[in-house]
Length: 469
Image 1 (cartoon, rainbow, N blue to C red):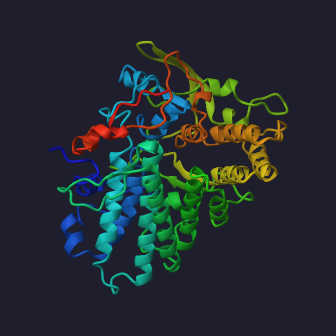
Image 2 (tube, rainbow, N blue to C red):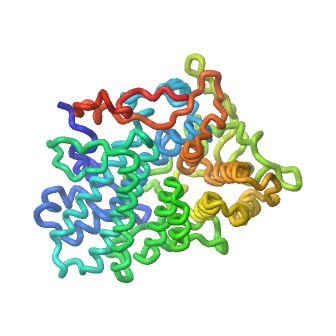
Image 3 (tube, one colour):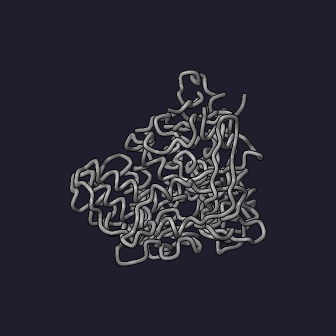
């Protein structure tokens, strides 16, 4: 019988893959040493700290790839496209026209094994930590590791459920690789688990003292102590609360995050990359294959007072060589390059200040505090887009449309935000179809391996192709 992706020995495989990482200040050492047996029977402080830093390497896996998290979700949200149909026609035939196929591990069923691999690594870390003496790692340092690891688990599980949505996810991952796989939990159960992880992590971080026992690297500059990393935890707690329409909790969490209108909109946590031997590079940099922005982003953009286009267009897009992706009746042409990632070492946002300000606007709008929502929307319009204050109808529906416009342009090509946000408000069909047979997908399916080991697979929506709407 084929093992499910969430129950096979992903920890050992990922440790081997990460063994070569060693640059960009994320030096996690030799992750073949510690091995699984050492972590299970005789864990050392060095091994624990190595695996803790390694979680950041796992977190960025399959994010900035031509068929990774940013590109696939960006295609479904019509932010941009991989037009390299000579390499694989499924970039058009599947991701734009559908259906999303559970057997397409590189396309419709993607963004699953990498996320669970890192969750499993964090579980291994947390279990091994219990075998380390207080002399080797102080109770405070252990609390810091717990708070960090559970926050990473929450982020990874959030990535899974935003892609699978109503199809649910596996939340019981602490199982024997040879045993039965964890059940598919509902969307509500999955979000409840994410909330629990973030809140447990908060408690650990508050008891973690002044420093972590392991390095977090350049991507977490300013957030590399327990107190400051807690602000990242609270930022994700706010994002989750917004996805759940829990506006009051969102506002409270934002108040404990790093939201600050007095600093750069780019302040935040980032994935970092380098060209060091064996390290990961950013593979969605400008000029990669035929990644192109949606040209309709320009025609849909609002204008500044001088008649020029929204600064977020001129700063993130540039005219380049025209490319066309064609698969059967599905064809898209664009000459718009993304300039967001100019090199293969450009960092990629995990969560940043600009999003937090917009989340506060969204939460205030959800609480029907339209005037306060517009304060933050206008702040982003001015400081990110160079636009004048919003002058449209002051109704909940009109201001929501304005909020979604600003989230789309502010968070463009950073993590599939348009697809997630427009689905949240049942507005996917307001996005451009691009082709006559273009479809919008409310959720991605599970990979085939997750279904093959389940006796109830036939009754699981996530085990069927997703035809789109």
